[in-house]
Image (tube, rainbow, N blue to C red; front, side, top):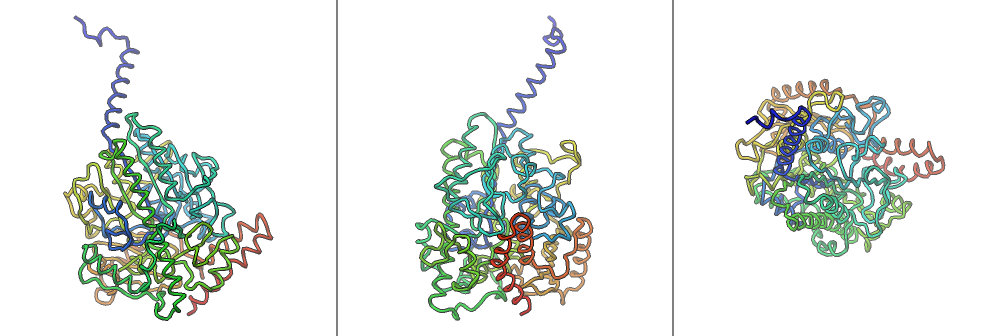
Length: 594
């Protein structure tokens, strides 16, 4: 009897082979885990209960109990560069996003790798997963470009609802700063109008659930990217959550910073002998009047409420995945794009804290803080508490600006309820996701073009318990932002902070023993400092990092770029914006001279 293949014509044989390959691919897809990547915005190192916070975050704590919490994870010090590295595994200077576009000076923006938008020389993790058979969804803040060829709908995401700006109101479709004419939301590449009952955290989870359900049961796994607006300014939350934190912060930021340190030590998040510095930007709580203390305490109450509201909606997503039978095959990754922000003016009655928001239709009244129509932000004092016990915050390269929570839990993560002090960096997330999905990184040429290689390391050895770290003592990881510099190598970090609160000095710290960066070792160990400075110079050269123009300040540059854009379209509005933003520049200049 002749074999079946002997009787088949060549075309029939080819169809049989293709069918077999298709079935094999489908089986592999069905065995692959779903992956949910959740990104908070401006969340501080100790803002979660499992990292030492008083804020109620049971949904995220439950994830921590089911996986690994990283206590030495670092990201970029502001949003767009971090997001570019997160989604590609490539250094921010090679992705085209070394800084947010709103802060890039014209001396740099004329270069293609300083556009502030995600370049086509990199491949997103969503593209790789989509090509491997995953459904890919995104609901949340994008901030990597809003031209038609820059939106997430053409960067690997099958379904999207995305905020293209650096931030926006959480209650309505409204810009949060006068640098934007409107809040730019897009759905599947088209302009999008938010619903009337919008609240950001609830809405983003609603859309994620909608996307997941749209293909439920077809046998393909999904990758869902949920970059929340919480807790980026304006800090806003429903009243029911705000009420839970009224009175919690009446003792002020210094007391809160110390309380969080104590809890972080008890939880094993930081060493028992961890020390803290008092940041130069932290004012004396006791010097405030009773009314000022009440105002600042409520600002922080809204902040706590916004974190808890986000956690609640994460819990809704988890509950839904359980209900549809997908939870047991889902990996969750939770983190923040950078450390806490400290842009709130320190007192209620300052001109810029009341008049500028009022010009956009916002109120800063105590009674309505956090509600619809209210503008709210925490000031440097409570930002230092959000970063406790670390030093600095967003925009600076101290640990408080770069070290944030990161939790990986769920399907295939055998290590449960464990802490890892392994140094990890934001570029490690993409290779870790690819390893979880059993998908190869992009080759040197992908989609007909040359692409940048991934530089991050897969964290699977740590997650599997087969290794304590993925970086060796001599492996160096560098980072630069607006002239600030940092390089990590082994237990050590060198850091250079400029601008208002920086000291323009290179410092050396052992960030494993001293995460608070209280003991500068540059005098005791000059050889280590020089070795790492050499590696940092190598990093600058390899990534074509451009020098900052003389006299650069990020706040002044934001104002200049905004005015330049608006004057081009409407001179009258540009003049108005100049006077609205002028106080910020004057405050900056007075601080920098002081």
